[in-house]
Image (cartoon, rainbow, N blue to C red):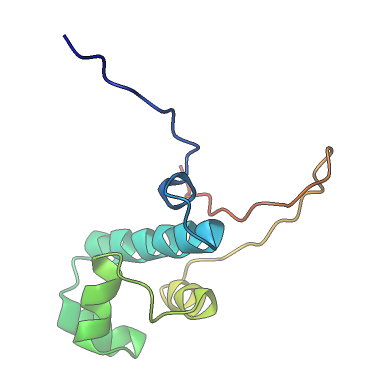
Length: 108
């Protein structure tokens, strides 16, 4: 039987694929997920969400699908704030130096 090679995940699929700006990409997808979850929790249709968030329905559809290339991180954060969700940026100094990370922590 052939052995399957398994590589543990770093927690960031974009980094695991070797893509540039992996932290930024994951942060944007995580912000989009928070937007989608809040829209779903409110029971809004894509059309209603677009009206209330000053977006178009196709933009809401892209956010829901995690297709966030055309959105800046700032725009996604603005949408969350328009939903009444606080966005907090917390800075931590790395004890070992090196390049810091960017991540979005979802509320429990």
